[in-house]
Structures are given as C-alpha cells and as structure tokens.
Amino acid sequence: MRLDRNFANGRFIEPAGDELIAVHNPATETLLGHVSGASQAEAAAAVEAAAVAQKTWRKLPSAARAVFLHKLADALTDAAPAIGAALALESGKSPGDAANEALYAAQITRYHAEWARRIEGEVIPSDTADENLLLFREPIGVVACLIPFNYPVYTFMRKVAPALITGNTVVVRPSNNTPMSAFEIAKAVERAGLPPGVVNILAMSHETAEVVCTHPAVGMITLTGSVGAGRKVLDYCKANIAKPSLELGGKTPAIIEPDADLEKAARELVASKTMHCGQLCTAIERVYVHESVHDRFIALLKRHMSAIETGDRSVNPAWMGPLVNESSRQSIHAMVLRAVEAGATVETGGKLPGGKGFFYPPTLLSNCRQDMEIIREETFGPIMPVVEYRMLDEALAMANDHQFGLSSVLYTESYRTAMKVANGIEAGELYVNRTPADPYQGFHAGWKRSGLGGDDGKHGMLEFTQTRLVVMKY
Image 1 (cartoon, rainbow, N blue to C red):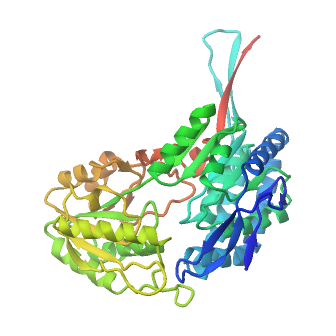
Image 2 (cartoon, rainbow, N blue to C red; image 1 turned 90 degrees about the horizontal axis):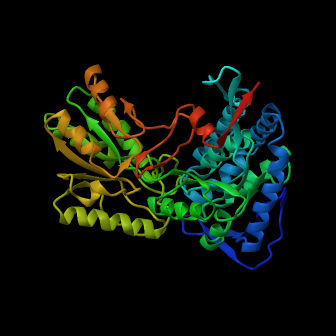
C-alpha cells in the first residue's frame, strides 16, 4: 500500500512521528494508502528552510529563476501520467482529465516563467527638481500555499509558479483529501533540480497548518477554499500581519435572456454544473430565466441533466464522478430536501443512490425563489436551482443580491444587454455566451465574500510582490 513522505529542504524526509493521513478513492471508498502527517517541529523546520533558501533565491536574476521554472514545467509534463494516475484515484476524476490537469499545471508554470523580464517597477515624478522617485517590486519572503481538493494539481502551480518567479519560496499544504498527487509534484520538483528549500510540500493537520501560517518567517498566505477557511487564514495573518490572498466561495449566477441560444446555453450550463460533480468555485449555482422562455429552458435543462450517468470514471470517463466525501454528499442532499420543503420542485435527481462511492445525481430544481437557502448558500455539488424573472433589471438585481461575487454568466445576442450586465454585475468575472473557465492570462478575483486579492495574469503575479520606494536626491 502506498505511503508518501513529506518533502522539505530538497529531500523526502523520514517522518519524526507516527501520524498518518489516510487517503481513499471517493468512487469506490477503497483505502489507497497513507501520507505522513508532518509534526509541528517538521513544519516549523520547513518554514525555516524556506526562509534560508529565499535569501539566495531572491538574489537570482528573475531570468535565472525562469530557467528553473521551465525545467519544472518540463518535469511536470514528463510526470503527467504519474501525477494523473495518483490524482484520478484520490479525486474520482477520469485518468485522462487528471493527466490533462498536470499538463495545464505545466502550462501555467511556463506562463509565469515568461513574466521574468516583465516584473516592472516605476519611475514617478517628484515635486522636487533634484529628486527621483523609484518604486521597486520585491518578493515578500516565504509564502504558505493552502491547496484545495477539487483541482489540487493545477491550483498548486497556479500559486507556486508566480510566487517563485517573483523571488519567494513556498511551503505548500495540499488538501488531506487529495495529497498523493502533491507528492508526485514533489518528485518533479526534485528532478527539475530546484535549490533545496525553495519548494517544500507537507501534509499536515489543521493544528500543524496553524504553526506554518503563524510562523514569523511567513509573509503571505494564499488560500483557495471556503469562506470559513478564509476567516481562519485571516486570523492566522493577524499573528505577524502576513498578507492574505484568498479565493473563497462562489455562487455563480447565469442570466438567460429571451434572445439567447437556449440549446447552447442549456448544454453548457449542465456541463459546467456536472463537471467534477459540480465541485468548482465557478460552477453554475443559480439560473435566472426570462419568463417567456422559462418552460422551454427547464425542459432543455431536464433533458440534458437526465442524460448524465454517474459512476467510477476510471471505468467510463463519460460518467459524472463522485463528491469528495460522504459528509459533502449528506450536506448537499439535506439542502435539496430543505429546498423542496420550501416549495422547490425536483425536475430530475434529488435522491441518494445506494452502493459504494460518494455519488449524487445531477439535480434540477424549478420554482425556486431568491430567499431560499438553495439560492443563498453554495452547494458545491451538481445542484441547479432555477428562478424565473420578468425584466432584466430584476434578474441583475437578484444576481447581485448575494454574499458572493466570484463569477457570473450571461446568455444573450444583444450587445446592449451584454454591456448593461458587464457594467452592473457585482462579480469579479462575467462570461458572455459561455461558462467560466479561468483563463490564466486573466485575473481570477472575487468580490464581497468571494475573496481578497486573486490569481492569474499580471495582477495575480504581482500579488506575490511588495513595493519599496526609493527617493533619490541628487
């Protein structure tokens, strides 16, 4: 049975304690193996190794750091089958999707490597004639990277690559649900020849994670996770006034206007809602449909959702896979039952299946209202509630009437409608006539309780820097 060790200061370390974290296949509930849970002393030592390494790493020209990132991207590409195999088992993804995620991780690593010669400061005019103001971009130091379970390989490099190119070093905590793929990445880091201490990867308990995040050497904490986890990170940041970068909950609204291509919209919304069993922060979570096309659109959604089968994607990659664990499944089912009690109609799905695996059927709910829990709270599962509206202003108001503001979707053929929503939506992203996909040259940043800071693109890279103003008198 598989046993993974933590990776710190350039090597896989023999565990100091006997804490083991069990890893299960969510499609079969089979025990896959264990990873060593880092002790608090091991975690602190990893942070200290990262702090020492950062003193040298930051002095390298950014172009030299880029050479290491390109080597890491090569190693990730070569290791994609092994990374994908581990990820498929621990996440319930198909082997093909899991291997592709490793390739996407390599792509975003190369993308950030190419920022090496574009990390620019500024020359600012002074009010004094014999003076220049120079603004430098500098690394922050050691970054604690907290990785989610849903896309753990891609998100790993989404955070680590920009941190490294800007001169920081990292201590990475993978999700305890999906840690095996992280240690396959560690092997790629080792093969790429990154200097010891630059990338450290440790599985750990919440208590040990607090030791990492509150260590005086940690200058930044970046998290993709729930609002509750974000609040905990903000508490950790208080210890040393570390910088937070948080991508938190989402409740993506989709507005379907009467002139929309309904067949295309229905097909794409269902694909978004059922990809990885709806466990995406930007998956469609609530649908606002104009009254004139409401019944027709419900019928289209029902047809597409009813056609989707669930099962082990290693057997059939066309199936929708499982949720992450039984707790998630029970929580989602309870939300569906409460929605029905509040007046929603189950068009398809909504029943707990028997047998092994944490499966839940694609579930379409009609007759939903804005005040229902199923509209107000994130499900993070394959649940699609639909609300009917009369006027665009009403739909836009309901889309904005929410605690979250991560992503949003609009289907229309009217440029006036598109511009009105683009200028009025209270979210970090708007996708017109398509569903969210987080292009890595963009900027993935949420409003409201969806987070602070953001990932991707120039602005995501600059999250990992701080400024120094130099006032030059001559």
